[in-house]
Image 1 (cartoon, helix red, strand yellow):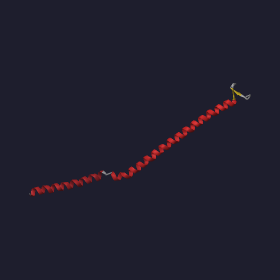
Image 2 (tube, one colour):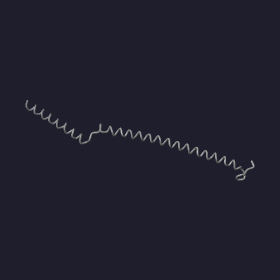
Image 3 (cartoon, helix red, strand yellow):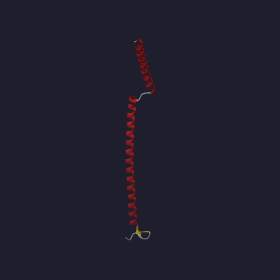
Image 4 (cartoon, helix red, strand yellow):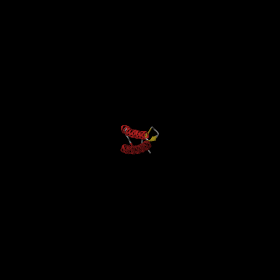
Length: 97
């Protein structure tokens, strides 16, 4: 090895080899981190899609289970009127006896 020396002690081939190994390791780590991030993004997107599907299902089922306040008041009013009529009929029946 009679080639040029870097820093007076190491041949330049060794330095280039060490730099290549270090850069290869850095790029391998970056590739691993990128793949991990992509996998995590995919799982989060899948969870978001699942939540959207559940929300759409809830929105489609909601009219079946939901009763508006006005409708409930109207329904209770009708029931109370019928009960009042029955009560009046019962009172009239007791007075006639």
